[in-house]
Length: 286
Image (cartoon, rainbow, N blue to C red; front, side, top):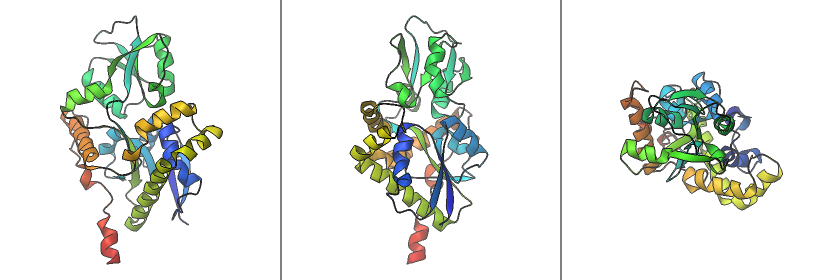
């Protein structure tokens, strides 16, 4: 079988959605060789066209759209929740406060930079952000992934990026966080099969979550306990992660327009023009 270089983050939602492939549940058409890296490293490597198939922050996509198609599956959106801007309870933030973000190409960085243009930004691995605030290295930090579930009691939430998203877009759309991309140079027939493999994996993960969650915990593949893993997956790896919906598509278009309006991108991306054309398979088999 052909080998496909697949990259994902070591975060609970990516691990959960990918493991049915790793465990051989999906009956794949390809051999997937996986690499786990933090999301900003994945974003940086996507800019270098490193992997065939990779997780990325949605905010990166307009910068790589000519090289990669956007997949309709393995999606992470926030709906009433998302990354959190945290600080010490005793800290009063000035306009030029110093803040730690998880990476220049992340969705939370895009939204944050629009809302707080005078903030002084340093970029860190997301696992280091809470400690940077506690040790006064920075005045505040944006927590993402599992970090949003529990943090030190001396810290508080200054702002929810979900609220900022609503304020900026003036629409009640889900907050696009992360998804998967596929190299355009792959044959279209292969691309369609790969998207099907991954969709099947995400669907199997969701329908077998009661089996999969203990398996991940027993193998120490995730950073949180079983209870928090269940909570986290309900937020970011759920039934809405399986297949891109019309509402999610509109949310992505809103994100990309927002980035264009604030000069983060040089053109507006309409998502429907950058998905894998499934109609090719129907015509080929007709």
